[in-house]
Image 1 (cartoon, rainbow, N blue to C red):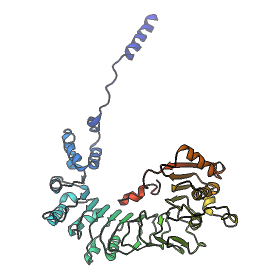
Image 2 (cartoon, helix red, strand yellow):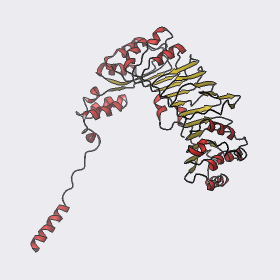
Image 3 (tube, helix red, strand yellow):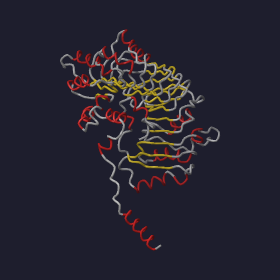
Image 4 (cartoon, one colour):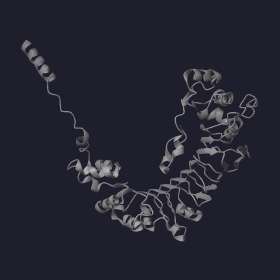
Amino acid sequence: MGTTTRARGKRRKLQGHQTPPPPPPCGAAQISLLPDDALREIVTRLPSNDAARTQLLSSRWRHLWRSAPLNLDLRDAGDISRVLATHPGPARRFAVPDLGSSFPNRRATLDAWFAAPALDNLQELELMGSYRPLPPSAARLFPTLRVAVFSRCSFPDDPAAAAFCFPRLEQLTLEYVAVSEATLHGVLAGCAALDCLLLRGVRGCRRLSISSPTIRVVGVCVTRALKELIVEDAPRLERLLMPEVWQLLRVSVISAPKLEALGWLSNHCTLEIGTIAIKCSIGEFHFDSLTTVARGVKVLALDIDNLSLDMAIDFMRCFPSLEKLYIRKFSHKCNNVWRQKMRHKMLDPIECLDLNLKKVEVSGYCGNKSHIDFAMFFVLNGRVLELMRLECGTRRNDRKWIENQKMCLKLDNMVSKDAEFHFTRRTSWNYFTNVRRAHELLIADPFCT
């Protein structure tokens, strides 16, 4: 019995000192164990030069670059020509660089690129440069595109432009392009599957009417020529976004039953939604009708220089289903004392304050009496408020200043007991002011700082 026990103990001791298994392989060796399809996806997502260099890693990788979908984003014309000549395709993305007007045989070079068999079934095209007009040979690629970016080029103003058809296109970015009203309407009419449209600095078109059964997001910014935007019939439109509107723009929404997010509304915008007319005149907003409301809008962003509490209340009455309200800037001088304004609140309640408004975010808060009264209105009246964020300047958010502001805002008396209240430091402009591509309009919260 004793011998058996000692033998078992010796075996357990020996087992405890057994050599541990070797560590799993790491780096390229570990990645090389993945199946070919996964490795091809990795190669496709790499920058063009890095993707080609994977052939040097080992014999396992040598064939992958030639069989992986091509992601072609190079600046040297010779390199592009060599890749298109040696890669059999298919190509996922092709970013065409600006060859410059002095490039020898520029049109012949572009025609040769667009005719390359490797670009058959191309999914993403970025054409950036002073191509005036757009090379007709590029139209060969349009039927299979899902993403298209045209930057600083021009569309031909002739009947052939209407033949530019993008039957599978989901995302379209037009950045500083020259295009006539008729041509732009023709291009959009040829986008049967369009989901997201970004117009940035478009020239040559003063009026745009959008009728699309598929589009969900429209973004307009840095408008120079565009003076009127009409959403005539967009049954799936969810977001109408205007991050940088510096000149007068009239926006009319005739039919967009699913519209949920709207902004930034600025001093340069005149907005009509159905029978609601919100007009800007010499920096002042006028609400032609407060008896009808837009119940679908849940997210509103305001960028109004002289925004007062009176004005904010009118906006909330127009959009009673608001859940999120973003304010980029507001007046430093307005009398925002609200107690007198709310004397008849029980007779004429603000529906979104009582039932829906969960988040308020304010930029440019400086803590003077006007701003304190403005913010305190939401503190003491937002019954379902979950988060309020005040973004301050870098010199105005030390601990002592914040504690004083909390006392002035009467945070202990917040009507929504579960609400969070944050002071944050302003480090940069809102992300959305730098949007450059249509897919950036699709982020979860485009107005959040």
